[in-house]
Image 1 (tube, rainbow, N blue to C red):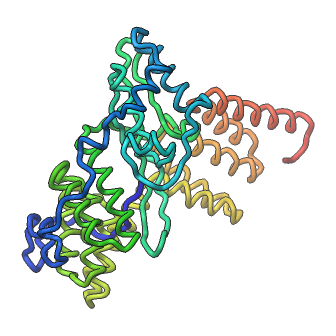
Image 2 (image 1 turned 135 degrees about the horizontal axis):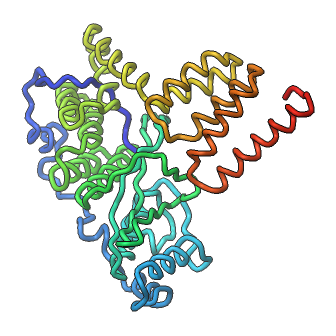
Length: 377
């Protein structure tokens, strides 16, 4: 899923125009105050269609154990050839995703949650803190985030179901969220898609529904609402929305960044610089940002700089095998095979899957073989 990129800082202060949250949501400056709500009602997002029930009747035994039901459902939707779900950037309801066999990670989560609950499974939405990935689409900066599904199997523990399970890593921080937060994600995503298509009125209505009807502390929707206001020439409302995002989440880097840009355009370099410093400070403290810097240093042949970034990242997050693996490769490039083996062995220890463990084990064996033959890799 994606959110429009913003800018701002964590200082909780009133906007200078004194615009209230309710005024922001009313959208009067945009002419959206009397426009009907978005056509997709909340109940529709997870509604199960007749075609979905027929599919479940065919592929999931109604009296099977929960673990068997889950496996049958996974096999039918993900593993088998009977469904053929394909990824695209569009956010859809469960029924739309089933009908079109297309959607993004949230579309898939909507589909799986709806069908899992239909067969009696205890399924919940889960936010996943994947490494930050900033990109630019249609002149809109977006921050990609991720939602998947967690199924509670009681004494058999929980099971994670992900649209792209091969890329899911157990080292990522996760949290189960209520349906209201998932719906906020849904309407925020649809709002971003409307904004990218140039439909500001629909975008505002979606952001309003994400916030007012589902989760008033969902900072991405406040940030995106501010972006719409700014694009349509209402900077005071944009500032108020960005600051509201920071009240909801003081570490919202998107809101911080947008505020910095806004103040810069308004001729307030001091406040702009303050917010940019806060963005920079937050990024430097992020272990995945430091890992990215380490990769850049590694590619440039600056092994010592890469090692410094990686050791910082490991102090912040100690269960990420990729950090240890790159650290081992840095020492290998420096000619210190003993230290390289030690860090690669640590990568093998924390690797979450057998495939990763075998990869690191193979690398270590190769190092030992080369060392015994007196070769320099």
